[in-house]
Every structure is written in C-alpha cells, then in structure tokens.
Image: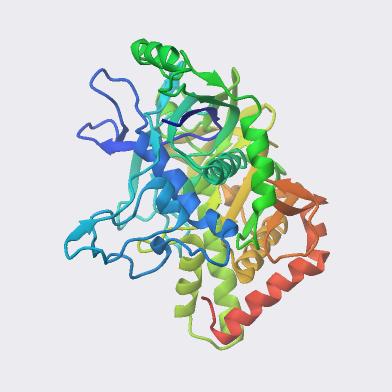
Length: 501
C-alpha cells in the first residue's frame, strides 16, 4: 500500500457558504450542520472544487498523445474517459458498460477515485451570520419590487480557520506533481470553496501544507503499520512527515508544464472613496439605534466595514450594459446582443459566471459620522411629520478590490477596463445615497496580472505558471498600455461584427 496524507490549513478571506435545505424563518438557507449542531463542510464540496479546477487546469500538462477530459465536451454521457483527471478523481461515467475484446461479456471498467477527501474540520468555530441579497432592476438601478427578489443565507465569517484532510492512494509520481500544482492553485486563490463564489464568497488563504506518508504493510514496516491502524488517527500518529514535498513537487510541475492553454486575468487595487460611503446592514441596524449602519466584519480582532462582492458586481454589470447598448447603437446593431454579451461575462440562470469579484474589506479603520435627514412635504415645503431618519456614514474609506476572470476573451477584458474607467470618471457610484453625493471612488495602486495571450513578456510566478504583472499608481495609467488598448479594440470588433463566442 502506498498512501500519502495531505493536510492543508487554510483561513477564510471572504465568507463561505455551504448550504442545506432550511425550514427556519431566520434564514432562507442555513449552513450545513451535523446532528450535534456543528458546522460541517462535506469532503465532497472540497473534492468538487478541486476537480472542477483540475478539469480545466490539467490541460496545460497534456502531451500530444493525451486528451482533455470528456467533461469539457457536450456529448459525454455514453462513454468512459481515460484522461488524467478521471484517473485521479474517478471516471465521470463509471457505470458505462463496454465490450472487452478478450471476452464476449460486458464489464465495468470505470476508474474509482485515488483521492479521499475528509469532511473539513472547523478550528475554533466562529459565530456565523446571516447575509442578505436582493435582485436589482437593470433599468431603474433600484430593488426589483415586482419579483420580490429579497433573500438571505447563513455564512461562515472571515478569519475562520479550516483544516482540509485528504488521502492519496497509490499515486504515481506524475499524479503527485499534479496534486502539488492544484495546491498551488488554491494558494493563488483560483480555487473557491462552497457556493456563490461569483458573488464574492469562498476565497481562502493557504497557511500551511503538510504531507505525510503511511508505513506500508511490509516486513520492515509491519510494526509501524499495525500501530497506525490501532491508533485510529492516521493524520497525527505513526506517519512520516515528507520534508519539502510541496516545494519540490511544485518545481517539478513547472518543469513539466507544456504549452499552456490557461487564460487568467486578475486586477486588484485600492478602491478609494472621495467622500462618504453608505451601506446598510439589514439585521444589525435593528439593535443599533440608527436607521442605517454599514456592513461590518471582524478581522484579526478589528471591526472593519466592507462592500459585498455582489454589490460591486451589480454596479459593474449595470454599467457594462450601458456601455454595450451605447456601442451597439453606434454600430446600428440589435440591442438584443447586449444580453448575450453580458450573460457571457457575468453569467445567467443557464450558464455560470467565470468572473469572480471578492468582498472588498476596509484596508484600515477610518472614522464614521451620523447624518440626519428629514423628508420634505412637497406641498408645504416644510418637514413631513414623522419622516425624520438618520444613518451612519463611513468617511473616505479605502477597500481592497480584487476582480478575476478565468478563460477570458480579449473583449471581456476590454469591457471590464471600460467599467473601471467609468468608476474613476465618477460615472458609477457604490452603495446608497448616490444622489446625495455618496459613493464616488477611484481605483489606485492597481496591479494587473495576466496568464495567457494578453502581453508576451512574463515577469513573475503564479502557481505553476509564468505571469505578466504590471503595477500602476493610478488606474488611468494602464489605459496607455498598448496591450490593453487592444482589448478595447477587440470589444469594438465584437459589437460591430456580432462575434462573441
């Protein structure tokens, strides 16, 4: 028996949601819990996240004689797949019967998984909280009253430490190399845990990697093997730590990298507000004494405000639609093309989104102030009786913004860049009170990282890949970059010619 045990210690950088059916009036969807009431992240959730990334990621390691996973094709339900992913994680169609040449009998020949993912251990479980969401009308930019699209769900908070345990059985050297490459993808935050990742959830930071090897049932190691079985704790007793396994295997992965098919784009920076910023916590304001207070998260013992990834996503989607409608009108094209292009980038009910926008957490704590308001009677011009309200406003905050997209098209990068341009030009506001002067911001200290065909030169490592990273003090500086001008040209071509695949 050749078994390695991999222990990954991670910490949540954005909330995590692993939901289950809820019959409670407190929340529409609760976190998954066991019979004792403890929060449980099933091993299948982790295995699914790893396999989903591996299906696309392993293409970069294929030799000419090897093929991609059949899961990437439309017609995959009636055949077995012999790809690297299916050999490691188990066949996507294990029950398909095939006729072996040496016999006349039908036999099952699907692979079982060489990996066993344990349920995730939550260390020092923190208090969960309820997160709200609401559908936005694309035309009015207000809550969609007709569909009543208000919902909420329970999440694990930022700063929760988790331990992921998995077993690898009889892995070849090449498969161990691929597992190290996948762990590097987790470290680079290209693997998300749980649901609603496109809304800003599921991002974790990799803190530590430990790999141990179990003693085998051989004459030299039989005593250690028996003691290990009796201990009932394979991960902590009787195993041998493999020093520098992750670092050494990652170096091998970089050497084995073939012609990369990976395309990945990331933009990060400081979202700096010019004045006040206003959001509302729909639960905590009830206990605050104010009519509206900002969303607050506790990180390393400090309470900080934050912007939900879904808020940033909604604002950018709204502006992207406006940009496309303007461009299509200029080229005398049908406005129905807008929805097709937007769904390609932001996703729809039929197609998941490749665009991930994480929660933007306050970089350093700033001051807040109370702002009083009163409704005005339209006939008398005086204050309306009983219409006074107040709110807590965050003054000139700075948030860490992170946007990424996998398997991008050049025109999609061009559209994202135009949205960021409009943020800096004051055409987009965040949060509530935009008509009162709140929510205007600029993106500063911008870092652009690309893997793929945007730009030829590379200057940094990103997991197993070489990436091109460009840093600018102001977001407007990268508009001058010829490479990114080409992405806007690609957007012009798509809107003019109607090509968006």
